[in-house]
Image 1: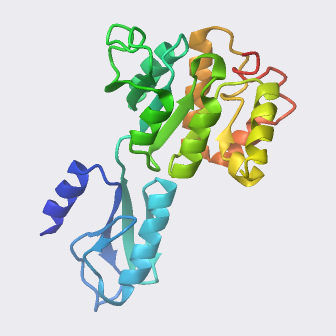
Image 2 (image 1 turned 180 degrees about the vertical axis):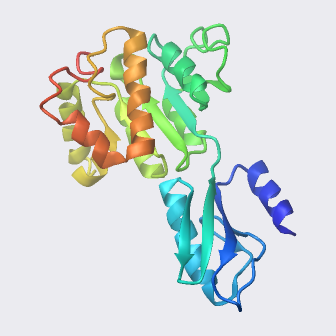
Length: 262
């Protein structure tokens, strides 16, 4: 398999990868080479004694989810690490009034959108015309069966919060999602966390969950709440977890998070 075939294969399988391209050398003994292709699990191609260093740096690019270049890498050549990612997926668990604008906004931003709900009359193409997948299923069963990885973002907006804890258990067990957000009040969050700690879940594990969900923009309407939620997801993707929590905990923002009142 040549480089082009490998790239096509990865794109078809929706596997994220980094293309390592050496575009200028600074030592007479070095030549340009075919690109090295690096995924989280494997690599394709080599550049002699520099191969392992290039692969290690490519995996940093993969983890950051960003492309960048190095001049005079290893004091030997200029190299570009070009990041190619599979499409981000937003899984909305619950097809209520917030799910509709959230799905629409996520589609505008290029997310693949999936809606899971056990109410057949709610999960319709009329309500979610742009969703790629509409799954009529019990919430826990739908999450258990759906493939989740580091490009998957999960939003729990189940009716009445009845199934939230069971959904969280499944998601924490899978342990792959880029984001798990739960719409709730601080009081409900504390009550849920207390029950889960009693069942053996560590605080460190619970801290992976974003709750109350959304950046604190004081949203009231379903549309405003949807914007707050998707803003948190975009901020996480672009700025990282520490940045998001620094905003949510900053006393300068007196407005409550979008789900604080729910």
